[in-house]
Length: 242
Length: 145
Image (cartoon, rainbow over the protein chains, first blue to last red):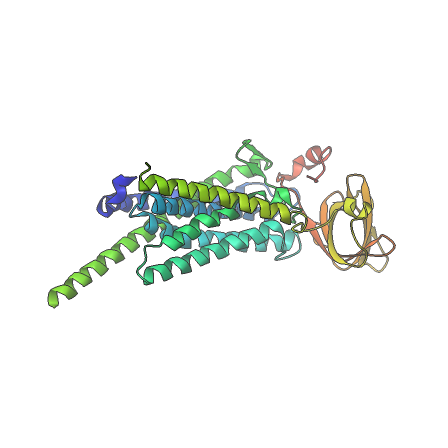
């Protein structure tokens, strides 16, 4: 990891990686979305409204995976003082927030025709909303800390502490009675209660959205590093004029 | 002697363990209060007070749905395990509301043991499949966890 402690070396890797992630992601998303919307048969109970799962499920995973990444970067920031860790965590936060919001929005749109309600305060919905608010809080905290010239230590502690919400989201449908149904896909047991004919576009959209997520994080990181360089150059110029 | 880097690592790991433990304890304490609904079994066991607003979640028993002549009033039996509670409701049912499927009713328990619902929500399960498989799959399984 410390090989990338040098921003120049990181940028050398990040520039092409951004485009690889972006184009590969779109390459997976196009057949995934097309397959999910037009090729798969409708669900036996919900009909066509179940098709939203090809966006909703990846959005939920990435909303949670995003915080895991943010927390991992925060640990690297606190423990190893990796110079790019804070940049990475800060770049992940807005992208994760967007996916968490996408999960909440698609879930709401899905809930209206199936359950009969846009929103209910059940365990799964509420814990996911809390994750979205945690992202917003992290962004505010990191910005405030940076403005005061800090290294983002407080934001990192918040990022690590926030991981407590992840098991709550995951287990909410098992621990508590919820309106939200139980999990369809178990990674641990490698099982899925989604029939094969309906399942196959999901890995495509999940992979596609994951690559888009990575591309967006890389872009945010590059923008942040560029901003730092601009600031450093302006400072040098100002000192030179004096 | 530990180097500062290792000290920080130990500190972070200890903090994570403490955090996880605290979260578990809090959730354990929340368990009964965070439940989104009570089940017919809770009502039969006498854990529910009459007249208090609450949600009741259960399966709609096959063949129990009774539509009254006015067209908007229905009654049906909600079951969990062997326990049954009769629910009556006046209003529009969600599209996915059907016998043999899950539902959540908001309302309160009447003094006569019937549940008077103000709102009915449909609850579906985690299985998704194409239509032709429906009969074969739904035969043995229930939607209840």
